[in-house]
Length: 190
Image (cartoon, rainbow, N blue to C red; front, side, top):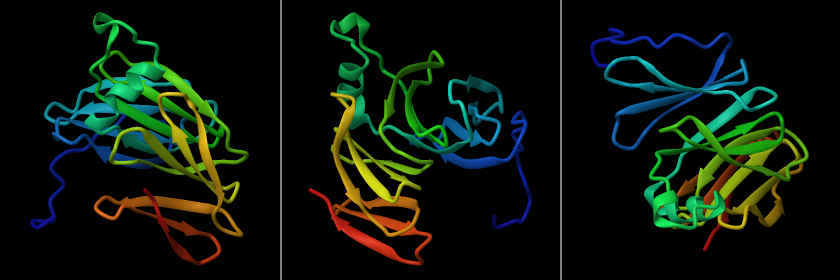
């Protein structure tokens, strides 16, 4: 940004790109789109490593799983033996099809799907402890998902209108939500 020059362009999506996220070591870049796909790019070469295609509507949001989530993801994916355990990297996607999907990016495979929202999913974030996912939706709720058991641990009526964004203050920990109702709320999260 300092020079104002674009140094790389990644192309391949057929419609709007909704979100981009860089993997923690910088080697990969993920993007999601109105074309109902998630693409994973190798940052150094611009190669599309994976095109993830199982959503049935626009993919609104993505989030890379922290290393702390690996045991819970493997348990949820049914990896009982050490040889069956996956090392990832893992990527979570949220869609207007009202589902969250957990992907093993190394093989381009959807490991499991979480369903429970009644409207579009707009934002997702991992709890730093690695056992939970938090999601924000146009159903006016935030949901806390137990990864290992693949179910909603808690649902909160968060706003009187669509919840459009969610983030987490890692050292709090606090969850922050934004809404069409013109408010930002901070939630205690233990």
